[in-house]
Amino acid sequence: MNNMGITVFFDGLCPLCSREIEHYKRQNGADKILFKDITEPSFHPQAEGVDPVLVHKVMHVKRTNGSMALGLDAFIEIWKNLPSFTWMARTAEIRPIHFILSIAYHAFAKIRPLLPRKNRACEASPYCEMKEKQ
Image (cartoon, rainbow, N blue to C red; front, side, top):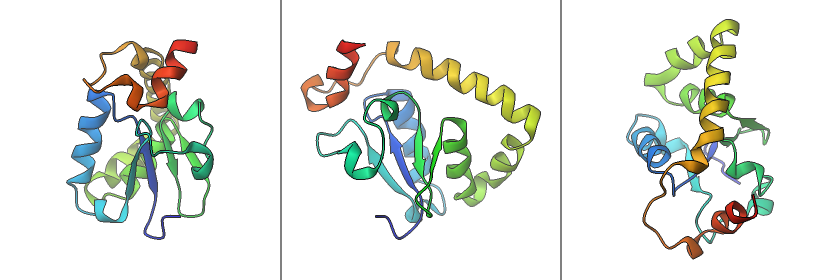
């Protein structure tokens, strides 16, 4: 368990996702966030308390109390923990804005598997096997 703060589960084979996570890692406060690449062979979803299929479909963040935030709410949790992004968290929590951003996030989540993947041997990730079964 991460005693520091939240745990962010991200898709390390997605170039766009990885760039965003690398940006967050450089921010003030990121040292209190644990980032876990769900495409690494060492990642075990059940040990982390996440659904092995759902974690590959939508962003997950485990809060300090052990509860999960999914999709847009996962990003809001990240933003809440990075001082320079707290304004984004507050803005994204406003009901009409949250609704619109949530629709946009789910649209992106649907097309994300179709985006090019990083050049890394697919055998290195259980995601590739799941993708073939979809």
